[in-house]
Image (cartoon, rainbow, N blue to C red; front, side):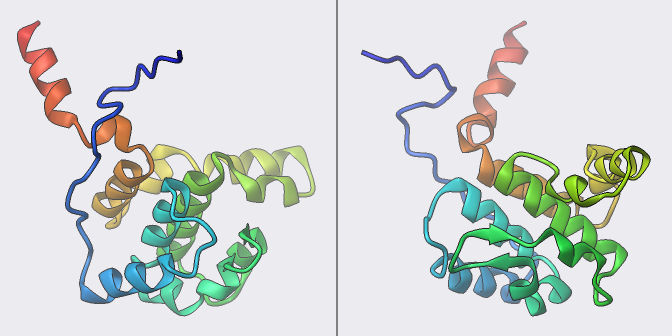
Length: 157
């Protein structure tokens, strides 16, 4: 018998998702259906890609729904803005648990600079922080959807 020690394991993890606007919500609903799987990785990816009109418009340049592969080269395309690259990096990080665009850099210095663009400080210092936190909650429901548990636990100490 295996034991799952995650907070809230075995409980249904449901919580209302906060969307930026109706376009974001509609995008999420429509594009999640195109994914090969309806797991937390895909939910977080699609949620992120729906945050901004630029990423919604260029979704096919960012992610291949048929193969399930991300397209890190999109980070260097002309349509990208300072905000959209943060959204894409957040989406990639939550989807594949890493920094996939780093490997395309030619030298160690460029790799380090690219890796730093995935840090919490670089991603969350933006107007999208509220939605990035929401994406983290979607990706890690076993730790985030039961925040009241943590608040109660720390209140006792």
